[in-house]
Image (cartoon, rainbow over all chains, first blue to last red; front, side):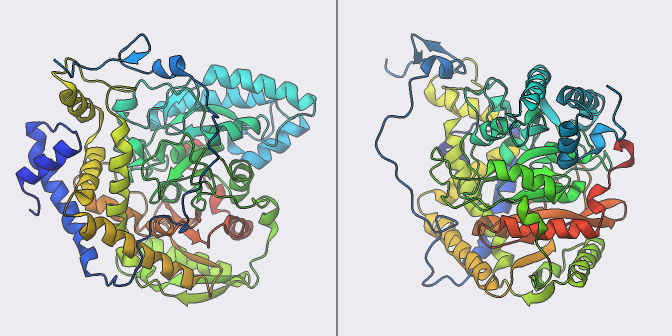
Length: 95
Length: 491
């Protein structure tokens, strides 16, 4: 396997994903297979090739700095799991 | 009013439009008859996540009134369905995921609002692979979709619900999205037409993002003509999508009457290498011969780096996926884990519980290829190979007008057959991914059967050549009737 357990735990932590203990071996094994598969790119000759960041090789379009959106906080927060006084609630972060 | 001479469900959009205009039936009759059909067959196929029956009937009544006042839009009263990753105001928008199982969108995607303004009526939202990550519709939290040609088989994915609904004649047309083949591959596996336009052609606003440099919205229909009718309304610049392209939209319906005479069709040698099922290869060759007999010229072309398209995609797409999926945090919307110890635990468990196995794999692959020490070796390298693949296409289009070949390596495969090995599943998209990497438009059209199952022919064109693809497809459909075939049980 190209990825060891510690590497997979590190990746899962960076991605903020909890992985159940019983899933772990399968996740590590399949992830290794994917990494092995994409490793074939290493053989491609890419000297002097510009990386492609946009499929039409275009730059980001900018818009005038004008206010176009209006406040829809109430409608948007209807989807929130926990709100109070228009604020999103999360577990305490400062003791 | 007396019943129509041809059953309503067996008609495509263009035919239905004629019937509505002539007063042969009303939008309400049409909508009610399709909703009844969806009720009879929908559950078995599992093609739908939500139905919007009440709103649809109200909208149909409004369309019938509007028709009499001559203020009707170009798609007035015609029923469609949306893939469940287009945001629809006031309606559940799940993306086939547990993490969005309770998400009711506060706004409409541009695709949705444009089709609404044109008068189309939405009957419901279709099942799909979770966040469009899959090629078999088996990664959906709401269960797999069945292929109407044989319910033990997959309809393909990720727009599997849309494809199955159109193939089973539950609706004449459905929207879809295509990041690596998610419109074209299910279209091929279900005997329907699926078009993925040029990157930036159709607005991505309100289309939940998977891989932002690859995603594009399109449609699944029965004919090229019906696809042209919808795309004409969907395409065009949208200031709310920063990657939307300002480029004139031709009249795709008018473009259907083009001719195949003199059209140079590129045939890619690598497309017929090992890996392509013999039956599929034979049907695609038949289709190429038919195009040639109609006056097209077949030209051999080479795409030297195309074999690297799947590995390139499986670096670029997961990388973009990992950043797009970071918005699902259990705080602002969607699933939240119960009794979290602290904020980190809330994030990790909400995401761990909310995402399915394939989405987690892609997030983790993307996190890995973007992480410190690996970025140059994987992500930057893949972006360079993407440039090479794109350049190959550009050079090919110096000598040909379109490229034709198979859409998928096999006909529909059994549900459960490829779920154990992600790589086997990924290789389903070997012929479709190149167009996404290069931002090119592609269409899959039915071109016959291998065994009892439909085979798709894929046409890929240069940027913004949707009119040419639709024209070629329509002309082929004047010579053949594969697109009119329907599974017997659903006729």
